[in-house]
Length: 367
Ligand SMILES: O=P(O)(O)OC[C@H]1O[C@@H](O)[C@H](O)[C@@H](O)[C@@H]1O
Image 1 (cartoon, rainbow, N blue to C red):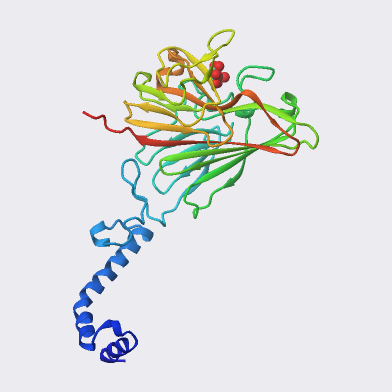
Image 2 (cartoon, rainbow, N blue to C red):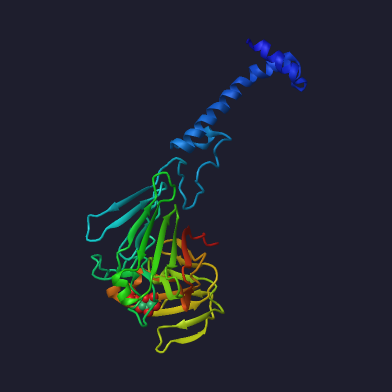
């Protein structure tokens, strides 16, 4: 069908289109505009899906919000970019390497289900491993994010329980079509655990890597048909800091019940401050602390926002301040815990606890 006939049809079916002549003029003059929009549409599709970074002026009105580029710490990532997961077995302990399409990376050891590294796309390390850490399985990894289960701290069981000293099974790895790479590890009761704690249980722990965030989800199941299960638990997170002198810890501390575990016997009180600084050996448990805890680090020009959306209601601040053998000035432990009172799980029931850390740039100080 010739153009003239198409135009006549449009005018017949849609009188508001104007006269045949009007429409012909619009179509002739509008052709460059239609071509431009088509080009922008194609450019935008390449930008969002295929991975070519095409400047926004060439993409026109399309796809400006189609990418993940938010500015600040985030990096533009094409929608079709792939994540990856690799299991490396070239050292004493096996490790799982997660890679996010933004360039962020995380390393998780099945030994103790311990996360030892989380780097954002710019290579900045968020996690600290103590300089005295043993990476050969001879003891729990000192540093990273090990588990304290089924007991936090000292007590009837070994200090911080046994989950950090056991080899967990790799239950699931994300595939390359999953944007946020993850690993799920599992620990179920066995001869070794029953010798220490005679319970029938299963732990499932998932670490999910995002662009400038990382989250962990713990599921504790009581596999016993008749008995309740009681425990305390924590993620003993070591956060990498430039120096404790550069660090402020901000949270809903003021008015919170705090147990000073540095004192013997422990001393209970109420916190007076919202903003805390670490200037001496510190071992404090803040009970039922709501919201996030922010570690502000002027040396690294960043803030780590640490929160527990479910399960862990307490926060422990620990620093072996002054202990050079541990490299005390390189880290601060802000631990999400369920330890001020025991968790009770009914028979065949479960308890879940999660943690999320977001990395942000410090806002510029107003002059
Ligand atoms: O040396 P560990 O067993 O890893 O524990 C380190 C510290 O962990 C903290 O969570 C405890 O509050 C401290 O009391 C303890 O000293």
